[in-house]
Image 1 (spheres, rainbow, N blue to C red):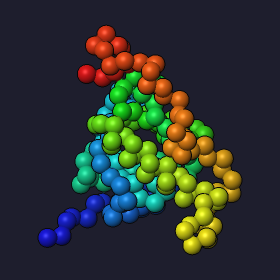
Image 2: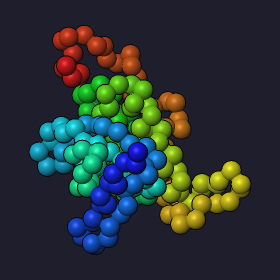
Image 3: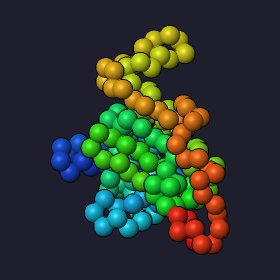
Image 4: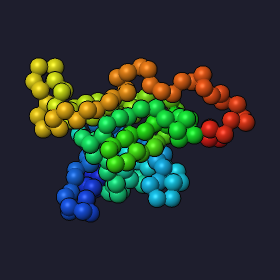
Length: 167
């Protein structure tokens, strides 16, 4: 049985249609909205150097994060005041997201981190070839490759009176 094709993402600024089928990684995350700062559950689709998001897995995505412009992806439980949260940062914007559990968070950080690295001109494939179309020394600070990220779990507890954690 074949599955239905997902509609493409249409960039409203350029009119370019981006194919979102055959994703490298996909699933639900909760994202903080840019304007109202409330949290909304969205379906995320990672394909190449782009992270798309939609309301459901079958709808056309209504947003995109260009990972070729990203500088960091790292844990952000304290910053977001949510368990299983992480941030994706560009020079202009920081996106706050959280997963349903710690494993999903780690999987997303790893997948997004690898996509950012592939966009870098310093990336070398297994065959020893430099990545094509890299950004030329974008200065990515990939905290996913560094086990010393800044969320020290000893700084907080999961007690009921701790305001940093969701229900």
